[in-house]
Amino acid sequence: ALLQTRLDFTEVYVNELEAGGSKLTLADINEEGANLLALQTRQQLGISALAFAGQAEQGILALFR
Picture 1 (cartoon, rainbow, N blue to C red):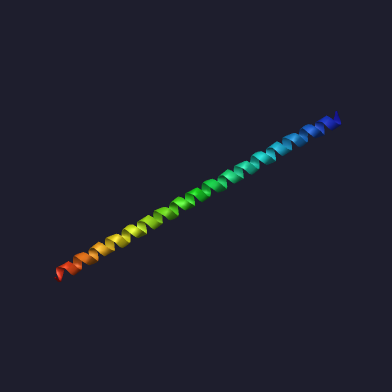
Picture 2: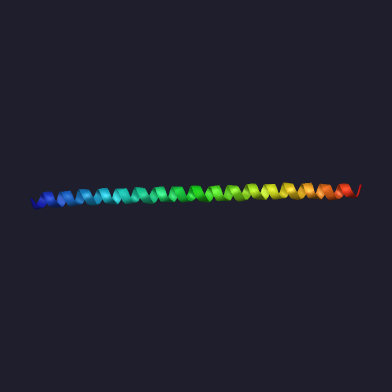
């Protein structure tokens, strides 16, 4: 009986550790996915700003022609 109780406890403990590890792994993947999306958005905004600045510069140069 004592051996069975210890075995049951150990099985439950291992299952809880595995479940906790899975949650941590998923949380890290989700966080990194969000970070990647944020960086891609910043990159796209930077590209758009450069394109807009280039268009404005061309417009100003056209005024001098």
